[in-house]
Image (tube, rainbow, N blue to C red; front, side, top):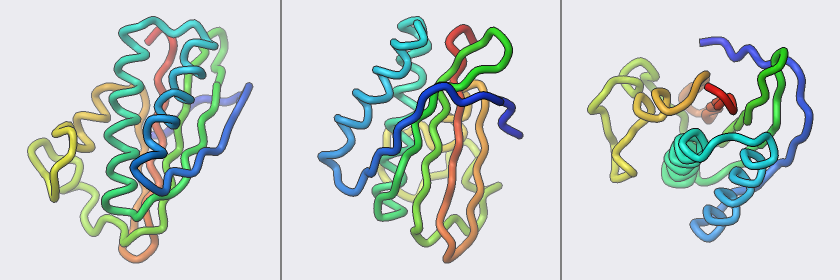
Length: 141
């Protein structure tokens, strides 16, 4: 799915290199969601998806960076997260996007579960080149 947000209003780049970085990252995502008046249910969905993706990035990609942005499309505001690692990459993205697929112990959502929690989801990965996952959760979506 192509990400459609157009205007970036505010952003922050966060390095997540060890497990201890996860809590401060989650808090930062919540700050951005609160700033755009995202409701509690959507905040929970966004933070749950972000937690799954950041743990995948740590576990499989050796850590990386997350760009947190407030984006706007018309009257809609949302939070866009771009997870980028330089790990081994995903050999078969289509397989990884299937329900029930797992290579380890995570929250159990996997990539397809994460995709269901957000409004927009995009993944790019190649063996030896790392992985980039971009998600958007709209405040009212």
